[in-house]
Image (cartoon, rainbow, N blue to C red; front, side):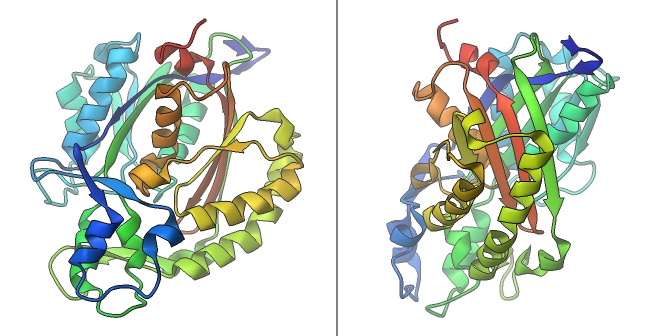
Length: 353
């Protein structure tokens, strides 16, 4: 809808996919030759996570989520103007790392988008889907497209497999890899139908001086991928800078915590989330209720915010016409914020009109 000269974008429908297999933190620890000195489940809050089957990869997980999203959408594939793939992982045909053509092209072909529809991949670590929301929001606002589909298929547990094999010390840079879980999310966006609905703002900051604190790359020891994260340093640096960035965003958009019903932080660990939210509370004055699902899904990378949102929508835990404050924290280091009212999504999940 046009408000003055501005078009607002909204979340039109949301689809998800979770592999059937559930792997507990206890199971992962039992597989390790060297056990950690600390209680990983207590420290991170991760009890279980979903784990891919041999037949599943980034592409198949993304496809399943996209099909689920389109079942709930009023749009058919041939009506979609753009497809954005925001996965960190790019596996296709098993654990074959696919580079070019990128996964968005195969998703576009398999879903049946029209020939002139745009498709591309972008990645911004665990802030990938929210960054794609920012990009697509701008594209819709400027009139470049009428709608678009954001997809992420996170086949991320191969780094956990590597960590289980390679951790040989009681303190190791790969411990954060044991918190991840696989999932797929797809989000359809279009023009908001009224001025109260949709995305109100999106802001991101990249603190590239901390880019080396979390590195995902081929393993130093074995075939396969590994993630080496200085988790304590990441959270210390983020927490030091979050107040100043949040204060700037609040002033820029003239908001307080009272403007939101819920906050969804990136699902890293319960302790990191609690520390970040404690800082946010000082500046937001009133902290909205925090939504968490890390205990059952782990850190699902770029899909994490929408896994949480789906979980609470599916179980009817949100008040009607909720306004959400999404808080992104990703390696790189990326700190970001998206504010959106999600009444349209609630209708897709059977909330009364």
